Length: 265
Image (tube, rainbow, N blue to C red; front, side, top):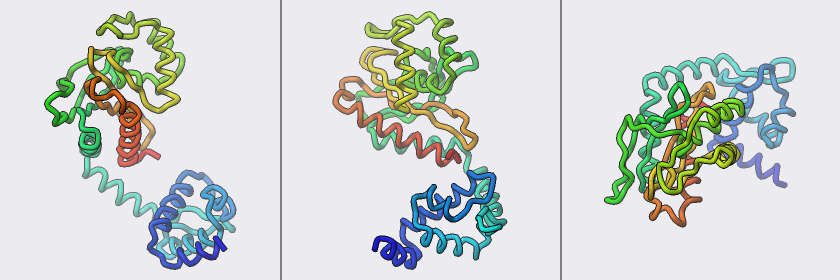
């Protein structure tokens, strides 16, 4: 019964679910070095074979996919479309896509949003862009300001993408200093915080780099999976109490959206 209803929906041709399935189908073929069978695609996408077969036939009509020995792979039309999309992305610079996401995040959170990048030595983060909150009371920072990795949400988020050996080397090299009364300087506790950021996908600090400042950060990646920087919400701690989970969700959502716009899958 469910499959029959799905057939009816797919015949409508323009349903949002059908569009999503086309995207997931093309992504699955992009990720495979070999042609993929209909049965395998059905398992990977958790979609009935009858529904996928109809989509594949439509894509084949446009040369976006092609059948070969009972399996499917990308067709010449897909590569032409890919080239056109690459050219469009070149015209719209990556920095514009990141800044657009920062604006969205600032509007959604009501707070200042920063883009932080690490230096080559890995000891400091530098804020290279910001969108200021419209609130009268807000976190004030300037482009070019630097902060130590261990005391910032952005720094901890960036450290969480490093290898365990690189993190150990950093914690042995750095000599943490208190920047606020509650700044964490114990290497073991910092290691735990970095590991928590790796597991959770975001880092959050309260009164670490400065008194009364809460930071929440997630990592942005590009099409090659490289780390572009850390997306940071910086807010007064007094206004952040009771909404730490909300801020974390907003950062995760927008960091993922920006990464997708840069081609990360």
